Image (cartoon, rainbow, N blue to C red; front, side):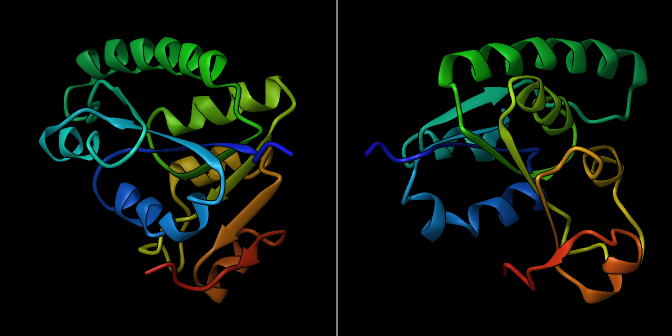
Length: 156
């Protein structure tokens, strides 16, 4: 039996750090990581199967709109190329469109809300919560915001 194909996606920084904490789990699957291109992520290419999107900080809204649009198209083609069974994300930027693309193709979506959020939701969490097959929070207090979530505890 072939292992499930898992696509792991997040923006750089804390989101990616949290996603990489799952390494002992995702090595049991046929996996591929999608994140943003920067100096840090270029070094990851030697260790992981990875696709890089354009870095998309929201500092400059006009530029961000173009970068985000480009990343949506690139994410769609990565999805078609990798044909994952499951998307696992810790969020931000193009992780949200990737989750909606997955649902369009009737694939499973697992969202892990940020460890930094103890009493308020992230924007990506609010957008993915309605479509997530499994929504994981890292703090019990977050179950007030996401009643159907599972408290998975800290992944650090």
